View 1 (cartoon, one colour):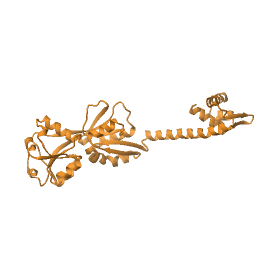
View 2: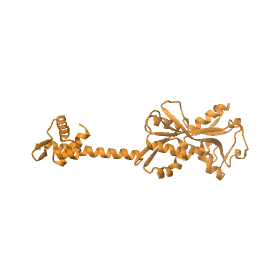
View 3: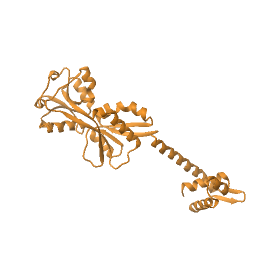
View 4: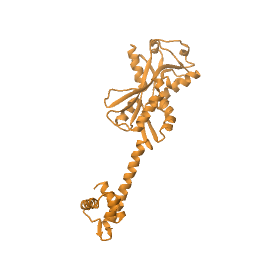
Length: 300
């Protein structure tokens, strides 16, 4: 049984005869008759009675017609849905984002996404970089926007923006008046850090080791689960932290937070758009990815 047979069955019934049904379908009468005969043979029931005045549906034919109409209508709906998907109309896109992209990058592009692709409905899941990469591998998100990467060959990474982690203190902190400090000074003062698995935490540890400083020398005052929590703690005057420069632009401008330069030390981190390797990326994900790249070129 195939869709063409269903279409021809409906055409014959609606036309009232094989000849008129064949004409409507632009086929010969014998071809249509063969299709209907094959259909009846497959269902093992007589669907149409042939009479001198045309065709009459049997009871089985009447039931078959109801379902044939439903199947053909569903096919039209399916075609419309796929057409809408190709045109990015009424498309759901689920993105996983780590802390900084979720709070400071993706919200910026939402008005532009709505203007350029109003049919895309975005759902964002958040967590640390490791959690979002796991979500991508579990197929619970189609695209991940994160601040760290691993060597899993099942993932493809596209860099789109970068950021600096800067040592920040409140304007009331004694170090707010320091022109510069050295790395060894970090070992003498309590520091707030992110939880294990965060991209910023991994970037800081890597940079410290590269500079010849053992991260175990740090005095950890607290481990907090988000950049926002760390930022608020530092704003309240509680110790100091390496924070995303993107995330504290307004506080720096208002003088609520102060950057403390560390001589010979810088922590640059990359943000990535991540997809599954050898998977077809939806047009919605492609559109989102292109917009992210275009919007944050200045941060690269």
